[in-house]
Amino acid sequence: MDMDMEDNIDFCISLDKNGRTTFSGGDSSIDYRCKSVLLREFAQHELDDLLLDAEIADCALLPRTFWVGSNSTPRCRLERMALEVFRHHVPENSIYDEKISGAEWWVQIRPSSPSGRYHVLGCDEDGVQFHWDKDEEFRIQTQMCIHPHLSTVTYLSDIGAPTLVLDKRADLDGALIQNHGDTCGFLSWPKKRKHLSFDGRYLHSAPADLLPEGKFQEQCHVPVEYANNAHISRRYKRVTFLVNIWINHKPMTVKPFPAGMIDKLSCGKSRSTEIVSEDKSLFHNVVEQKACTMEILENDEIKRLDSMDWNFGCNAFNATSGNQRIRLKLSVEEIQKGHIDGSNISIKWKVFSETDSSASN
Image (cartoon, rainbow, N blue to C red; front, side, top):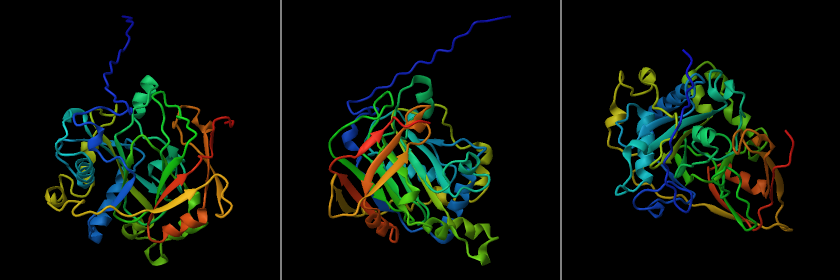
């Protein structure tokens, strides 16, 4: 029997004047500034467990991101971390729908292992291209962009490219909002236990070419005596734990980490639940880290400025986003000084140089 069927998907999303999903208390109750704190100390065995968990979660056979609801009971170490991030940034007295609020989490490893997602997909093995965090499936279904309230990065190693955040936004249709005024940015060098947070509407990346030439390969070099020791080799990669904070909107198709894989993770159901029940918060007595400041003028005759030219990542705008490029000027020499101690740099461009969508595929 032949049947004509049409699937209708109804969406009801309330956005405020800033393009964020609404909740009681308003967005003034959340700190959207680019900033970082240093989490509590990790014992080496705890950090090694996290690195193993990250490698498992990075498997190309698994979904790219995972969900843990705001009222969920964490089943493993990574879910507990994601919930702690959510609860740290969202004020306790906020009123929202717990069924569609929570943390979307995932990991990124550079270089990715042979079975890792970014290796299998042939993505940039050194850095991360410019992109906006958004509900990817919602974008496909509606051609509209809904962003998380906050994006966060927790560094599990001191290795690799810095995170660069620009206050460049996309409109609801996913197009870059052009402006001709000053542009602000925030650059964060990786530092073990550093937790970076920023406005989920902002453009960001991890440009590999901001590292000194050959530095990433040097950082990732495993001493010959540990070459066959997977336990130690995992420490020689750029590993980040990413959490997007969603309030009154759950990204379409994003599901919890597969139940059948939980026992593979540290402190999963079939292993010790110490980390799930312990009282020691990741954010215990944290203090906001300072950031150096850098101001860049359009025609600065004193500073030696380098002209940088980067692609936007796949689906940053749309299916043809490979056309999109971003060009700006930086003092790379000054920026690279921060990679030694994992510092932050707050950057202001008095005139944002340019974006270009005319390049060919």
